[in-house]
Amino acid sequence: MADSVTSSERDAYLLSPDFLRKLEQVAIASRKIMVGRTKGERRSARRGSSVEFADFRGYLPGDDLRYLDWNAFARLQRLFLKLFIEEEDLHIYLLLDTSRSMDFGSPTKFQWCLRAAAALGYIALCTGDRVQFYAHARGRGKASRQFRGRGTAPEAFAWLAALRPDGETDLGQAIRWLQLSMPAPGVTFVLSDLLSPDWETAVSRLGVARGEACLVQVLSTDEISPSLRGDLRLIDSEDGRAREVTMGASVLRRYASERDRFVASVHEACNRWGFSHLLTVTDESVEDFILKTLRHLGVIK
Image (tube, rainbow, N blue to C red; front, side, top):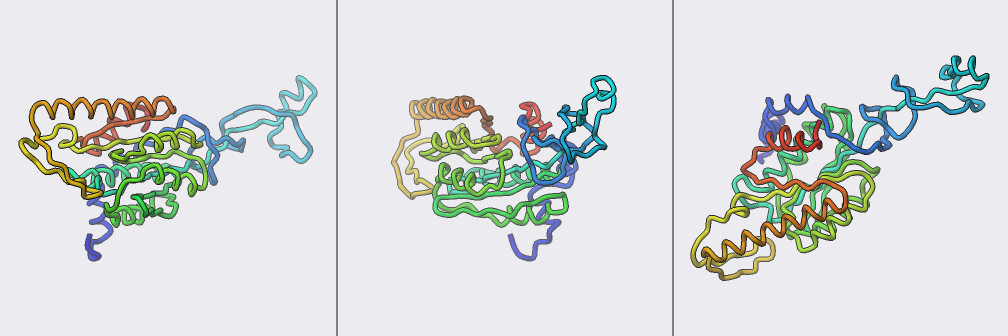
């Protein structure tokens, strides 16, 4: 996008004002209690001083006397301290596949993922969580700073809008890079077509990491149901290799069978490692995917 584009125009390019207002009413669900860094709106693994009671423990010298339970002392003649759930922020990580295979379809898979990442990031910023974006293709990775608070949304959107698809896929390396650089466990969203020879390595790395994960596999409508027919010369968008094919009825049936087998294998692997796999097609609007599909599956609440 041109440098003359204003921040409001850039925000609208990613997410409409109406969509932004709807995103402010939801939150990313976390099934695990994780330790954050600062006060937020999430249950923490720590015990703090919020209004929600958590547990008792015996009094130790130096404890804050304000939290002694005098009713328990009257009954048991022992000093007990009240513990409360402390609310902290959650770390949200969004990894975008920026390889050349993502630059396909109408809208392209890359454009769709860009808007989905912006939407998920905005939800987290509105609930006080920490958000960090990662973009990766083989040999090149780029990480944003950590964003926190709704006021940082324009800068986050600007970072996303500057990304371009280029290079080959190396999803396993991308996830390893993200996990080595993330400052704390959190919820990781991976947005990719998963057209990578090492997708099983990528899934297993997500599975053994601390925190939670959600793999969003995005395919174009032409990848789901090819419209091409006849004698064709297909060129790999990433490595440039060409292959002559005849797209007839039998080839299309084989393609559909392999497509279904591949998607089912990914879904089974993610289930085995205990995290979500969601397949979407670029003709599904990002708004419906976020507010309906993810909500129905409990990823968004």
